[in-house]
Length: 213
Image (cartoon, rainbow, N blue to C red; front, side, top):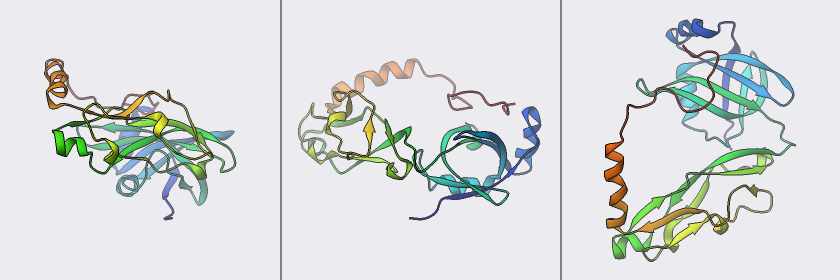
């Protein structure tokens, strides 16, 4: 497996002053956790952008801070959606010997026969699942195969996942992950959504950073 490494250095600018870092091509961040004092960091924006294309929320990454390596997970990304830029990254340092609780992205694969045969619509109702496991046992993503969905109304539930004994799932077993709906039923909510459209968010929902301007 390719080693996911991002180079960083400690930073001394905070609050509104981090705007100068961003103008110089750096992205502020923080790494915390595993009984360690939080470290404020900065990373090269271009290197970070390439790095983020290769990782998921469950990827074990290495953050090299002034030559010292820290094993971590990406816990939060703050984005400026207008500029399509990451403006802050939270890393959580972890121990490879201690279980952690995190969200795993659900990825769909295959073709549902109900779509081809009956014009059904695939409804991806659960985009992530919360789990607990050792960092080394965390999958990059949970892949759900659609090939078993043969008829309108068929669904795959949390109980249908087989992640192995090393992973504990925190979700209602009866909760639907993906289902097949008829085209007429799926079209109804779209009309309501059009009436309630609002301006796009600039920053992802989550806790505010001390570095927000």
